[in-house]
Image (cartoon, rainbow, N blue to C red; front, side, top):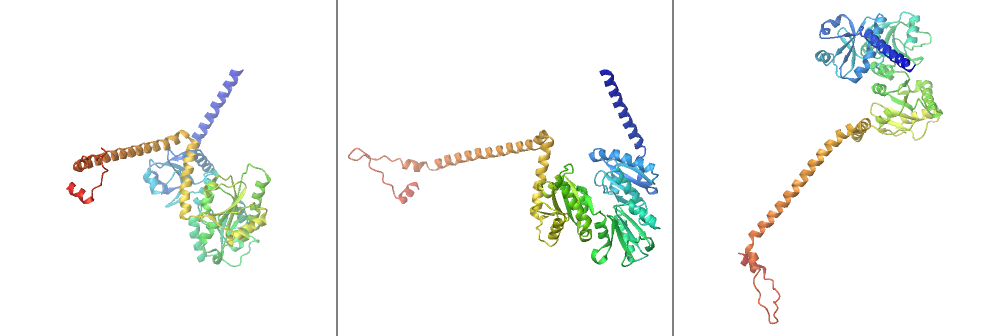
Length: 457
């Protein structure tokens, strides 16, 4: 029985391995391996290309996801072709497309190349390919189409009106920011009844089950406004998203919690931030971004500090400043008061990008690197740091002992030389003395200095 069970388990394992290999081989058929000929043939089609390096760990992690992207794009009947290129073997082509790191994902459409900067998941990559490969500005011909787009996309922008200078600015902004979000155009008749416009033409952003209208006087440059408003009001934060939010100029209010911890304090703090983001969006959406982050590892590295969980921190990602409260937030009103105190300067900012903070960052990063090396591989840490320190110690000891011996020899030489130069003075000082009447020698009387000098001469 035991042998039969073992045989069945081994057979099942072999079957699973065979299925996985067949699946990988099947998916690989929809991802083309590109070579030097791609440079001349690419302009006839739209290409989604992964530039990779064979030794890159992140590239190896992306490979099965990339195969799924190729299969899904083929099943959807997308005109976008999916390929991959070894950037180390075809470095000239990679350099032509501005590849500086691995993996780099680009969508190539004619003479244009669009960089993908989002999460490396199948759904996000496919959405990026559909968005960028289509029309830059997509028309909304009816209210039904408008509602369909609103339900499908979490954030999208709409230009309403005819030809105008504002539309030209809108097109310019779309050509730059199409990699992040969707851009549409519609006539005034297509706009839903709940949308009220004070003047035409207008640019609107629809998100968080509401909309906001671009005001040139209050919001400034249109491209900058779109870059700020392309995020939802409340987000699940990570390091990549915080990096992206650095371009918005907004302050980021984060509930730092442990999502595995189901205690009341962790869930309450997250609910408080969600409530402020929802109920006070008209007050703060121009200046603040809200969200929560699971765990404090990234925040601790960013702030070079140890934050206790749960807590609330407000980050200024543009200058690396942050704001902390010395107590727990009690409710939404307390959080609103904290935000208002930040805006009026009552709460003191910590951190920053001063010279002292930069030096502190260098020391912190070096310390973190050393600690991580020793934690992951103590033997490797000893070899990397112990061996050089030992060599340096031996060199310092050798230099020190060489200097000491040289000084001793030099000192001995100086003493012997002085003795040879003054033999006459030594003999003169040894003249015999006559004993006195008592048989004892008279006390020596020191000769004048002038007499001594004459004798020496």
